[in-house]
Image (cartoon, rainbow, N blue to C red; front, side, top):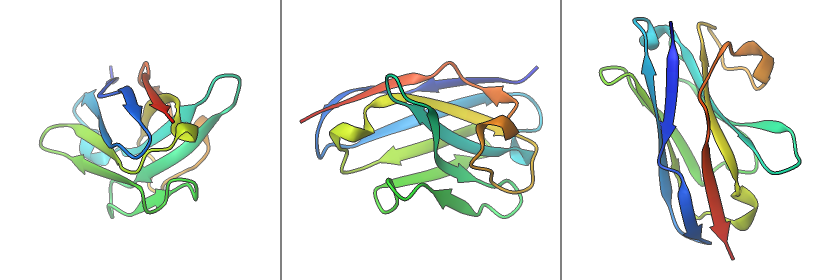
Length: 124
């Protein structure tokens, strides 16, 4: 059984930073490609960032490139999303996702495991 638990969301002002964490239970975390998605109210759940398990390659949505950084600590079974220079349009529920796929996918259907989400609200 694989469980993902996100934390670190909150209410911040534009320009501030937040770091989201996703703790993963299960024996094979180091072999999971991990990703962050976000869903704003009334919108689709969109890819934000991903990190591959084999190469630790990363991929970012254009809207967050240069501001967000995804990283992982396999010893702690945790993946992080450092979010800098936050904007009001970053407001959303952020979800952690993972699966034993070799390359990063931007498609949410490729990930079998999901967390419950954490709310990030950025005020202007």
